Amino acid sequence: MRRYVLLVAVCAALLAAAYVLPLHREAYPPLATLPPIEHSGTANAEMIELGRLLFFDPRLSGDGSTSCASCHMPQRGWTHGDALAPGYPGHRLWRNNPTVLNAAHFRRLMWDGSLDSLEVQARSAMQAPVEGNGKASMQEMRLRFVPEYVERFRRVFGTEWPQLEHAWQAIAAFERTIVTDPRLVPFDRHLAGDAAALSESARRGFALFQGKAGCIRCHYGALATDQDFHALGVPRQPLFDGHPLVQIAVRWQNAQRDVPRAVYRGLDEDLGRYYQTRDPADIGKFRTPSLRELKYTGPYMHNGVFATLREVVDFFDRGGGEAPNKSPLLKPLGLTGQEKEDLVAFLLSLSMELPLVVAAPELPPLQPLDGSGEECVQ
Image 1 (cartoon, rainbow, N blue to C red):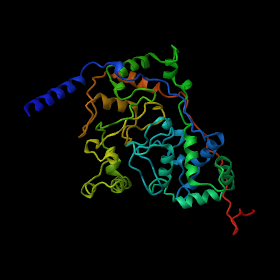
Image 2 (cartoon, rainbow, N blue to C red):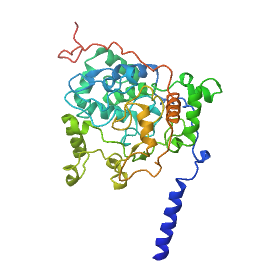
Image 3 (cartoon, rainbow, N blue to C red):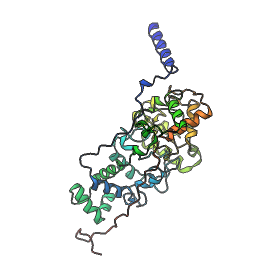
């Protein structure tokens, strides 16, 4: 037993020492340009256009007021711009709204990794009571009351009437087109050999990113994320204490995720990855976000508590916050004011110089059926 205890102590000491040793850049995949998205074999221009219409169509929601674009607004970086997402009328959500931009590149979606495809995400969002609040039978029937949709579904999927499963496929096909264009990203042009693509400040920030600041430990590869889950001790979102609808959302979300009653009754916080694994070691862990398109996708962190990138850099410079399962990768950095500015300049260079905006389409009208099941003639 004494040998076992000694072995554990030695391993712990070596592990702790590893986190203060100089960062070896070769241990992490370098930042890279995002590859093109491979669409499924069935996706084509007609399916993508159908998905664009459905993405903007509020008739898939319970009261016909809320579309995918209500929370994922193109002009706001395909997120919402509020600290916490608005949700269905009369509700507020408890997390910051993840952007659709580059979501097609992720292995798992959502802050806790709860979903594994854009198709499942579309269905989940439009049918969740506090988001789209749509019921499957109602959603499908509404699609069948739109003659143009009937014809488009028939051409794309070969079905006599629109099927809801195909609606999610079409929305996902459209979302896979919402990706970064490397030609508009200064850092990607830098990687391609453009010597003038980065400012001097951004170049210094890139060196800090890989070296003193150690950002590369969790933000690497083409997406600039390890796609893993970490507890950082992010400050509590003030809306959790000051907004009654948010307080209701926090408690309801914990209850409907089957958190044990003894925990739920006294819980007013987001447990993160724990909801998926039920491992206490995962309490407070959230997915590492991509650093791409940060210029357009604030506020930041899973609860939207930071409004600016400078606040984010200040937080990590302090070594993060306090959390039971806090990542050992977080240490005070000792960055100077100029170094913080340089790091922000580099982070902004990972965004396109122009936002990716898609105009809202003119939606096809409803047309009721007559008693025979045929569309009424107006």
